[in-house]
Image 1 (cartoon, rainbow, N blue to C red):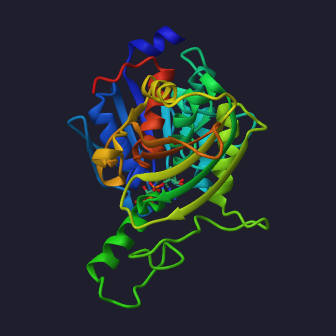
Image 2: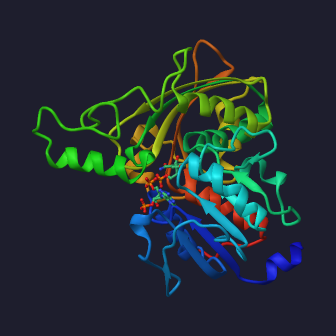
Length: 345
Ligand SMILES: NC(=O)c1ccc[n+]([C@@H]2O[C@H](COP(=O)([O-])OP(=O)(O)OC[C@H]3O[C@@H](n4cnc5c(N)ncnc54)[C@H](OP(=O)(O)O)[C@@H]3O)[C@@H](O)[C@H]2O)c1
């Protein structure tokens, strides 16, 4: 089965093809010269019949209906939880790998939650078609940063505060910031996607609140981090904030290690890790920012320093493109890993 997978071009479905993540997935198919035999884009009724141009061909957007995944090798889902819940198992049943970007299956103990640099070994070219979950965008960049430290020194505790871009709320979120910016003198801007105007603001709420005072984005980060790192009792505490950055999420991370190490050791572990780019020259104001990281593939890390009160605790600033590594790129890397494809970008 593994060898067969390597030899031929693949038939790929994308559910949510016209959305923020779906469109980026199309760009990535192009950039990485994915071996494509067929592309089947799916979206809502409103987009049915539109053409999507990828790899020198127009592909017509369809709506979901019984049998629509027949013959596909891989279906990438980015249309929200309800659509994934209903349709991703059908794609797997039809013989495709269903790579699901929603939260629907992430904490299902029978479903793998994959970041290739961290736990890619859980699936491989011998795996059978199944639903595979793509983690939350803020979780992905966090676990990529934590993995080399966990392996080398062990993790005692992780605290993270996020500064999340509006693109994380899809096209509607992106447009809301642009519209408010164009009308920036308006004292009462209209808001629909976010609970308050996002221009000139910070909103400490992403999703809905539970009885303990955590919002759903925070709960996702805490639970998914433990599952991906396979550290069920790791102490993780998250606080998430929406900020008026257009694209790329930033995180301040406080990580307590199990072993005392010096800065050179930490820097070497991070620099040598897959998928990480260290940018840390504070005297020259060099550290990653969402503006610089938007459109890039790696997880960028800067401001790496030790807490003066606790020699086991390290602080760092972690920035990554939430639509690329946080969603579409990670999904593509899972597919490349399963089908033994070497990206040609
Ligand atoms: N943005 C991020 O940073 C990010 C990161 C990780 C995960 N995700 C997840 O990815 C998913 C999509 O996010 P997004 O940001 O790309 O949202 P988006 O820009 O709002 O796009 C939503 C997509 O879903 C399609 N859709 C809506 N109703 C549909 C239906 N009944 N049948 C088929 N397709 C339908 C839309 O099609 P139309 O254009 O026709 O309406 C559009 O293509 C969500 O589950 C989100 O949580 C997003």
